[in-house]
Structure formats: structure tokens, C-alpha cells
Length: 404
Figure 1 (cartoon, rainbow, N blue to C red):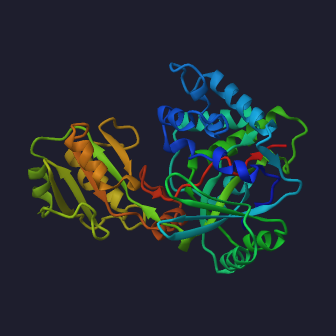
Figure 2 (tube, rainbow, N blue to C red):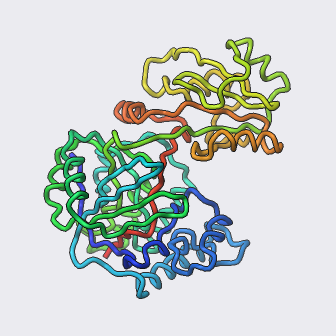
Figure 3 (cartoon, rainbow, N blue to C red):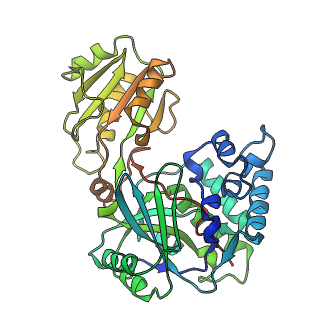
């Protein structure tokens, strides 16, 4: 059963929350981070993207980057903008995007649960990204950003959150530049929530596989360096926001291809019935739309041969039926001929990239469902890379978990 642990969060004072909070490290590059943090020395981007405070030619894997992250976190926590809770607490974190609310519990989860598959995965991690986040965690002695989880809620957690949000004043209530509202309530008496999660058999990683894997590695490495280590130490728990599955929304994770055969549509037409002037956004599961030569073309994928939930995913069928045989893309994770475009950017982004010559082909997919994600995870299988794009994104810097 799942463990959720209250913690003594470091957090901005309410009047500083909007100034400190920032987007997660993995949705922007260094150039974008530097632009967003420009003129704001208290932005949490200085902690999670510390290369922005070093010379432009500094590698993100340079030892100086990790040291700078620790320095920036230490300075921020010691500033008058931050404070640490006196007692361990849980929190309710609600996001509202386009009028749709999504609320979850913000607390710490157990590295042991990750190792014992109480926390289930659905993606492989890249060694370089895992190494990078592990070094940040160990150097800073903190988990700076939460992971997004989901779970099957029989109703107990949702009922608690609804009652609490209706009856209590929030700690933070801010709207960010992307017009998403972030509201956080502090739950001091958390025993009811701890007990509720102790009856939930599985948690599922929605967004943040690298942060989970890095937290587990960091716990082992930190323990090896500290002979007085015990299982209740802060390094053995890492922060997450846990959302009931019926509150989650997944957007498509679309693709662009840089080089295609001149007769791609003819090749496609030999295997499928190709619809011209198709809808840019596929209307249902099993349909895919392709953009090239100022036109959208649509097909319906063939039914899977394998009888398992991972093989039945649209993105798996796309690989098996089109990317591999027609475009010679064998591994989407490593092939330089393919890249990924988050669904929040819409199909207009695919058109722009193709029209301006940055890509030869845009591929628009029907979104993976949250039910499919849980089915794949329950079966112990893995999804192809970049199968899900969760929106809205959590903000970093609002609640920070340090080892001590």
C-alpha cells in the first residue's frame, strides 16, 4: 500500500510566491530559462536551471552548474523571501486551466515504494538526464521539484479535498502568465489523508520519471556517504502531487520528421486508405493526421497483432506500421530524424515547422488516455517515448523538500 508522508516544506512567503514560482526544469531550455528569469533574482529557475548564472558556453553537466545550484538554493532559503514550516504538513494543490479544475495532494512519497513497484512506471529513462538530476539532488541535499502522480481514488481523497477547499482559506492563490490559476491549501492535521493513501495499492507516475529514478539513486548514494543514515531520513522521501485519475487530462504528444521520401504519400496510400483534406486533430483513437505540402492527410491505423495494452497504443501502432517500415525510424528515443512537439502547442506548431522548412512532416495523434496509461503500468509494460503530455504543469519553488 502507498506511503505518503507530511514534510516541513520550505516555501515563499505569500507575497513572494508569484515571484519565486517557475515552470519545471524540463519544459524549457537554457535560453528560455534565462529569458524568463531575467530581472528576477528570486525566480526558482536559478535553482533548477543554475547554468543561466554562468557563462553561455558552460555545459549543463559541468560541476560548476551543480555547485551554483546549491549556492543559489542556500541563498534563496536564507533570504527574507522564504520560510520553513514549523511542523510537518500535507497540502492540497489545485490548478485551473481554461475553467477546468484539477486538485491533488502534495506530500512526500517513499523511495522504497518506488523500488518495490508500489509506484509504477510506464517509460524508460535516459542515463544522461538521470545522472544530471541525481547530481542536483545530492549536491543541493534537496528535492527541488515535485513529480506528478495519479491513482485510482475510491472517493475518499477527493471528498476530503472538496470539503477542505470549501471550508479553509488557501495559503497561495496566484495566476501565472499562462493564465493558469495555482491555489494551495495547507493541511496541518494530515492523519486522515495518510490513512486514506495507506489503503491505495498503487501509485502511477504521470510526469517525472527522471526525477523519480534520480531520487531513488540519490537516496542510495547519500546513504553510502552517511554512516548514520536511517530509513526515516529525508533523502528516502521525495515530493509529489498525487491526482485522482478522473481529474487528469492528457494531451497528444505529436511528432515532426526532418527527412521523408519524396513519394511518402504514395507509400502511405499502398498500405492505408489516405483521406485528403483531413482534420488536423484526429477525431478518435486509431486515427492519425499527417501534414506536408500545405495539406493534411488522414489514415486509420490497422488493428494490433499483439494482444497487450502497450501494443494497442496509437503511438505503438504508428511506430510499427509507419515510422519503422516507411521512414526507417527504428528507435524514437535516439533517432535524429524525429522530434516531439507537446500537444499544448497545437497543430498550428506542426504546420509552422513544416511550412518554414524546419521539418518535412508533421504527425498529429489522438491523445493517449489516462486509462491506457494505468493499464500499461499495471501490466508491467512500457510506453514508447513521449506518449503523454500532461497539462497544466505544476509550478516549481512553491513547496521545497530538503533532506534536513
